[in-house]
Picture 1: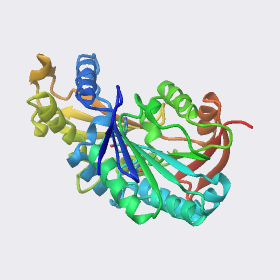
Picture 2: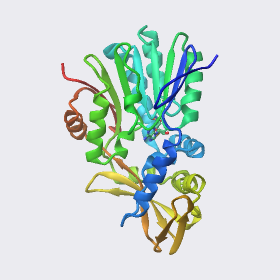
Picture 3: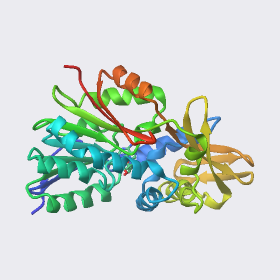
Picture 4: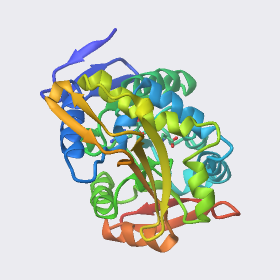
Length: 338
Ligand SMILES: C[S@@+](CC[C@H](N)C(=O)[O-])C[C@H]1O[C@@H](n2cnc3c(N)ncnc32)[C@H](O)[C@@H]1O
């Protein structure tokens, strides 16, 4: 029996083992409209990566994770596999809060270890993609008897205050190297927001993609089969559908480049011809010169020192630095200082 619970900000539906808070309503559309108005009227056009993930975008991202060139997912999975037990013992977590949870595919290794360790009580997935949160809640409550799932359908940049109060030792996980999508200033601000979710004895487990050979990096974001190119162009389809824009995705080439100065990957869309697009819902005409590029994602790469400095700026200390033999990717465990 689904039982509606009154909440002025978020719509809450509670079932015995599953509670879902939806913080988006029309807020999602407003945030997309604001981001498009802001990003497409800048001298260097730019859109934030969170709008990639409609149902098609999420499906394409899953395909990217299986590509031979895309090492981060399989490497992070291998590190998790090797260290899940140790992490479960170190954190003794009763609840796991996951930011950008997606399908929680890799998270299951941690859930398994915490479940076997006998400490796990609750999982709190936070994701903008509603279908992901809902299907994840259904699957995990049937896979882990006794587990409660409190899903938050929301934007982790705006809705962290909707994460329910802790009920025991907490582990916040932020996997996939998604922290790299923030430019350095916002990254530290966001880490400070995350730190507010942590009390004494709580931990943050974060995946960070490491600085490496630029060719390996650019290939990971520009695969031979063109799946990443399709993922990038899908953003234009999201704008066409949600804001009645009239982009022709075939007017744009996918570009992935490594910025050596900032040590980050940039994904861009480059106009193949000069043209003007209308975003009808915003009454906005946007002109692109031939060859003009619009930035759709940055993905910063890390060294141990960069991670440690960012964590320290957020008032957190590094407890464990877990990496693979080739040092492609790192999982970092941090906590508030004791
Ligand atoms: C790169 S995927 C990572 C998924 C998964 N954690 C992993 O490691 O494979 C990013 C996920 O974060 C979600 N996401 C992206 N931006 C978000 C935001 N601002 N707030 C909440 N979720 C977001 C997407 O819907 C997607 O499921």
